[in-house]
Length: 164
Image (cartoon, rainbow, N blue to C red; front, side, top):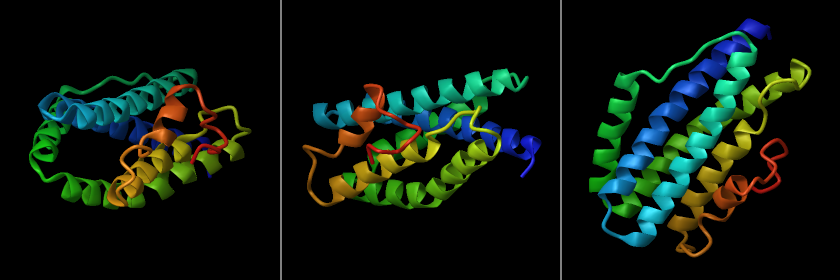
């Protein structure tokens, strides 16, 4: 693994966080259900937190990032769709997405360790928290579905993934 390849992965992750943040924020704006609005907002905040961490790490690597309007617009459009779909279907779809994206984020964590751990870590924990949210929602445990997400937002240890 090269440093350049790792940085390219971080840039890809950053773009994904911009998109995800826009999806969740739009879904939060559209829902009429206060509990679901709270959940979408928490997920959007987790994306924002992770995006900010990635931005800082990329800046330290000499890479400037910016949020492209097209990516935010596409995320908002996806949020419109997500907001219109039945909740269980949306959760199942989000489950498919997090199952496929978690290995990518976990690989970035491993690569960070290979680079001496001086880079952003805990990306896998961020994605696993979203996956756990989906699992709990689909299992009918709506009361505790956000536990892992909220732990990360309260400053839980993203680097160890202990909250997931």
